[in-house]
Image 1: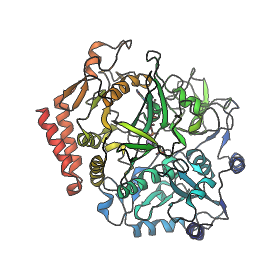
Image 2: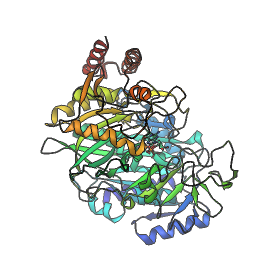
Image 3: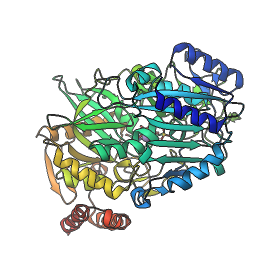
Image 4: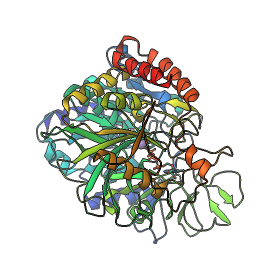
Length: 579
Ligand code: GTP
Ligand code: SPV
Ligand code: MN
């Protein structure tokens, strides 16, 4: 028994006072027992046998997405958390939560969940322990991470593990907090059972805590998918891409090449998080620390994402989707006609034509990564995969063209730092509001983003062959508000230009914002796009870009002297190029 682990578990038990403490081993029999208990208590219900061993969970309707306003970084100094985070001192944070944790598990079982982020035996992998009173969290963690024995074996007698204490509490938003103590590698979460608030391996550890570890140790923990693109000659180029929540990472990671792109294949390595280190060869190498997908259900269907549909056909958990009368999971955008009647995500009857959504817009599936037909043969490679390109993107009705390439690494850091996107249902609050979301990390960077930009610049000097940096926007709209670009599988056309550029090919023209594809650089054949709209996809409006640079200045100003001078240099030279 690991002494540091045992004493921390004893401490948590003394505080939370559970009726029972169960150490989870991740076995099949344990999983079956937990599922049977949740079926009996109504936390889960069984779905149709067309989805073997798959279950529906309805969360509390007040608890359906990450709650950024209740998420805190409790570093010793407020400046270390930065203007990008809500801050509380470690003393105040703990004092507040100790009161809520006291006796919160009376009448409940406390589960101790050891888990590994990253492939077993990888030098990049790290151990976490989540203590939780939610069996739903346990069975999700079993899909999302490598859970149980494998993690304890990797930990051995080391005291180096990320501690996460989670309780459902009373599920009241007034007593909901997700607190991070980066200096102690500690997470305290109470009052939510949903997604990134409760599955502590994901955003809390693999991004907020890991980003501080990455800063201290010289690597990257990023909100990025990882994908391999194989050309007809059988050569694979790996790309990592950061888009804000619900902006297309899972879809791009599982892209199916359309019939027009003969001989091309796409291999999924990860769909949400990348941990990346500089290898002995001076290149950047990436692993996916997760073992499953916690994907957005609405909009997922055989046309848009057949690989996701195949991944979730068994052994999956569906949260806040609707169900048909035969117990099939259902959401807006799934295949087939809209049924006449459904049970909606809250458990109420729903009739076709209703103005309410049947599935919650942030309804999710939890599915094992190994079930994905496009899973890369290298997805569990302990060394990871070498990254040739980093792509940033956002959801922008205007301004950002379909694709452009940064001039060099430092300009690429500016491009990442100036990402903006319309908000989505993945976090509570207004949807569709443009906000700056640097590197898609605004809600996930566990420290001052001024320092984070410095870290990105510094990493550039440590790589002999840094990845080329790009920006994409699949979401440009026409005057009627319709997406101009078909997206999904057709995004491969853009990826082909990106990897051509990485290999010193691909025709490009210089523009004030970076390199744009030359006419014909992105193959548009057979898409039947209106020629005017087609050229609008690549339009760079100087007025809009100057306004954009002003907005970036306002954002940068928040960081005061923590903003590296190079970022302001990049912004000023951009303005100069815009004339
Ligand atoms: P998180 O899991 O929240 O981090 O989200 P994500 O970045 O993985 O987003 P995901 O791939 O799940 O896509 C979110 C929504 O965007 C879905 O409703 C998709 O259907 C839609 N979407 C994804 N790719 C495209 C695209 O190329 N074009 C358009 N128009 N919509 C897309
Ligand atoms: C996101 O919001 O970016 C997600 C879902 O991937 S959650 O796990 O809730 O953070
Ligand atoms: Mn995400």
